[in-house]
Image 1: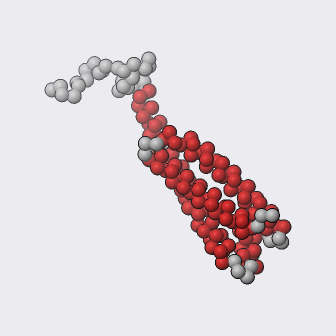
Image 2: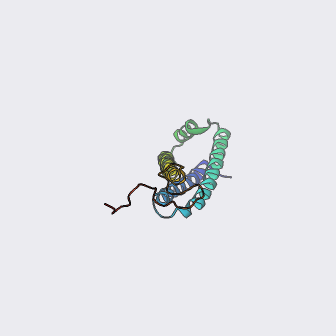
Image 3: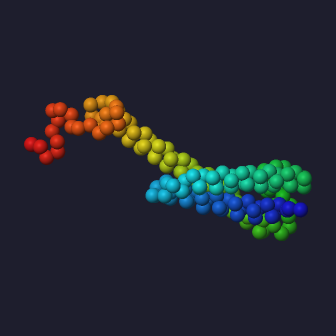
Amino acid sequence: MESLSDLLVRELSDLKRFCDLLEEERKALTGTQADRLPDIAKEKAALVGQLNQLETRRDTLLVKNGFAKGRSGIEAWLASLPNASSDRHRWTELLKLAAQARDGNETNGKLINILLKQNQDALSVLLSGGTDSIYGADGQQRGLAAGKRSFGAV
């Protein structure tokens, strides 16, 4: 049967991989590897599912052993162990990585919103129906509007 210590090891490993994926995602968003984003999103979603399952199993084991679910249960479990230094270290590391994942996910979300805004602004310029539009309603590039000088004309 699986122990709480075993679950912490698995959660820590999966959460480290999730943080690595967030870093890959950030690099893809700010670099030239946007084609990697769908694969990263798929792997992130799978890891989130695994992490949720591990948390559920951890809570089940905590309750089965007479502790509360969640953080308070883990902390009570750790306090009940005479030699829990490695488990305490894993739990502390897990909390740090969870905060790092939250911050990384928030940063990537902001980057995505900035990129979406830039794309929307660019599309708006290209598709605008005003006289300064680069393209006509038919999608063809317009020539210079009458009465406007080209660059280099005096």
